[in-house]
Amino acid sequence: MQNNDFPKLHNATWPGIVGKGLDSEPPIPFDKLLEMTAAAEVNGVKFDGIDLGLLDPHINIDSTDDEIKKIADKIAGYGLNVGSLVAPIWGGPILGTENDRKTFVEMVRKSCHFGKILREHGVRSYGVIRIDSASSPEEWAKNPIKNTELIAKTFREACDVAADFDEKLAAEGEICWGGMHSWKAMVETLEAVNRPNIGFQADMSHTLLYLLGYNAPQDRILPQNFDWNDRETLKAGLKTVTDALRPWTIDFHVAQNDGTVHGTGSHDKTGRHCLATDPNGKLDVANDAGYWLRDENGILTKAFKHICWDGCMFDNSVLTEQKTWNDILATLIKVRELHGWS
Image 1: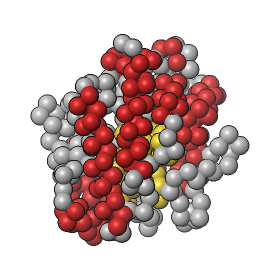
Image 2: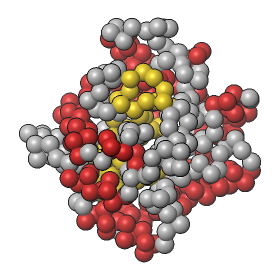
Image 3: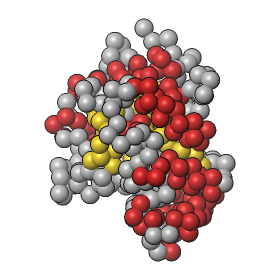
């Protein structure tokens, strides 16, 4: 029996795209992901909604308003709401050219407009626009001070655009993005942006790797050759990272990780998302979600109205099996049982 109404439980569409393509498996169709999300059920509880990657081949960012409304109607037809949106900003790496940065900001504008039409059409009442630097840690490391300011300047321009749409932007903490590749770099970038509508998107898989210092050995928290059976040291490390980034967190992905990096297709090496039931997963997912959902005193922050499962770069045979989505939903339900509210 579910006693909590919040946070709402969302699936995501981009696992059907990320890591797929010419040098990997074909993308999973948008309609197929909606169908499996709607079909998932655990003891009468179903997904409340879905987060959208505004990415080809699922979504054309240049859709007309009428086309966006048709997408909204299709999603609503499955009994689902829309939450956060992923802006397709990777054609405009911030540490590229001036035109690249203009492209970045324009993609944010188009994403905000997309979200506005979804809101006005009645299918989206919460959620943010997700962004990142679209640039590598290697490029950032050539001049950290200058490049952090360039990222912050571009984020500020994007924030100003988003403010016109009453949208918040969430910068994804992932080790493959320059300026957000470590927990300390992420805090520095957010502080440099200095806008009220910028925040952090925490993904449990990616933030676990912050503890291991991939791409930023100087910011490593766990000791070399860490013994994953040492739960107390792991908990202390999670507390360090979440205390630093929780005040910024406005979007949250539930995920599992086996402590290694992984990449398929064109996607850079990043956190290896594991299935919710993977015995090699290093996190106690439901309990460890509490580091993000509760403050240092154990009080619920209620900083966002939904949580989303993010699991990318699985084989299509896994992603097209209904049991996969039922197991994911069961994990999200456990998170809400422990850290939800009514």
